[in-house]
Image (cartoon, rainbow, N blue to C red; front, side):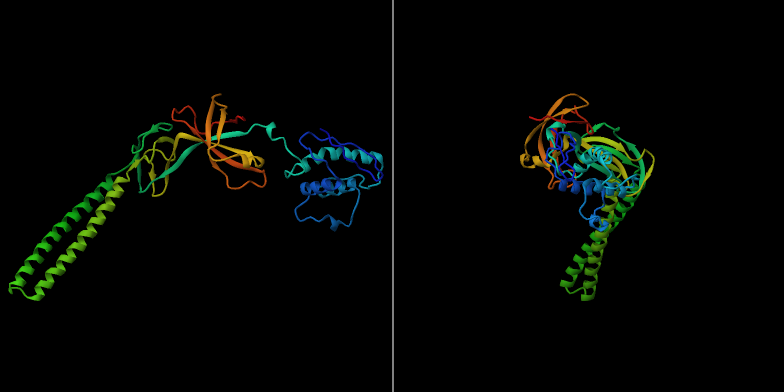
Length: 341
């Protein structure tokens, strides 16, 4: 479809043709408004130039001057040659200006395929909980593992010694507590028979309470040492595969330093951006079908997440569809297109 635009004071017509993407009849007001949005800064006021209302060709002259173009003749009464040259330039500039902010036209949304990219349903960066050397990776990059498997180990010797010392201290305090409990019970019996005074009775009770507190403190230290020792083994939190090693074996890592990235690709998310006009048609659980570029195969999925808002610049919204991948035929990072039904 072509759209003629008329210029001139007395109805002289010079048709300028635009591609089918621009399907709205244009007026001089629309033209000047779109050109201002495309060429000029947001706070620019054309009335400050002192030109007032003027011919659209002169308007183009001012716009191009603002953008740094050198003009040979900017007079609006420069004749038919100048008019023809400006109209040709306008035919080149105007479609981009009109389509710059997504207004002034209705795009043919079905003309372009909707691209998708596959992402894992779960992704995590595993960090060290202790300071130690990386002793060994139990799985290679890309290799699968099961939940609860040991996927890497850190050097445990230092933390093993800390645990042994804490355990010995706990055993010592536990024995002291047992003695204090027995001694306090004996004092209670002797006091009841009138053999022991109240001072000795209170002293036995104090020793029992002190021994109990020391035993609890030693037990807490032992539990902390045990946690640090257990942290020398990195356990898989879910079924998945090792995506990337952040550090190599025998390198020293500190607490909270990333060691590896893991993913769960038993299910994949097909992430796409749909035009805002389709927002009302997409619901959670909606069936979708995709063709993957790398494999040439088609796969079905269901809408898993829908963005809560529309992007104001692109006039699109994000949709995530869940695809079953238990047979591991697909890999995160593959791309494809949405098959329209």
